Length: 289
Image (tube, rainbow, N blue to C red; front, side):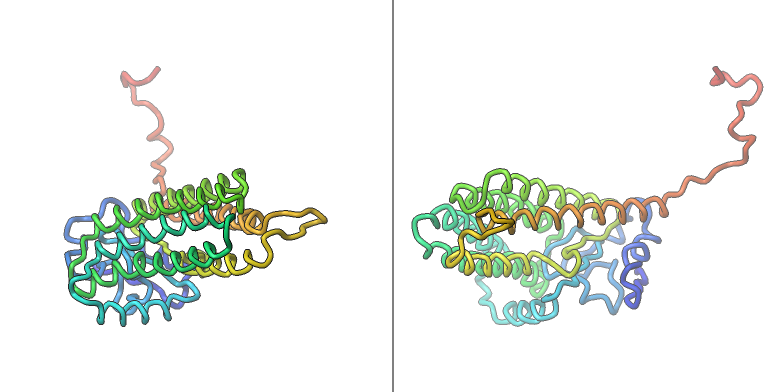
């Protein structure tokens, strides 16, 4: 079953993708190994992320760097040695994020660790973004396995990254807790929306994990020269300011996403009111109080 998505009106993409898929996804609609998701129309391949998504889900990736990133990843996948598989890349991305966390924790002793953290973020992008591209390029996709492993490693990696920043003193524990709570709430919303609607969003308001990594690298460079900034005549750690901004943005995205998903589900599953007499109990009805 193929859905007809309206690319010329992106704000209705979610509703159009789900209008004909209310209820459980039939087995024949599940993506088979090595095939693109059946939820994507012929012209919607660019809306999918070069990563993992559950079977039958439409992946939406329209971030600022999506087109450039996709081209680079496809070139890398076509030139990667055959002995390097998707699982190796997933492991690389996870270990790189753990290494980045350690570098952040040690950055209070030397600013060189901030540069090492930036390198770790690049390696994390390489592993986390390239694993799914390689799997599809070689027709070795495992949608359920990839979806689970990819997002569990992301969740554990985010915890270690924020913990490393907090223990370094670059980010206060209160702001770190707010960033983690915001990240996990957005993750829960994304997973529930994917399960309910069959639509997996990678980017929000043209921002995806790739843009976030780039923002962190820029922040690392700024941190070397300006670890503390003045805000309303108060001296505040630079990453505290960035963390508070990130929390505010995540709250806006979360509220927007919850309202959008709720509205779509409400339209898909409207309650059909029967005739007024149907609410009255018939004579002899034992259910009548």
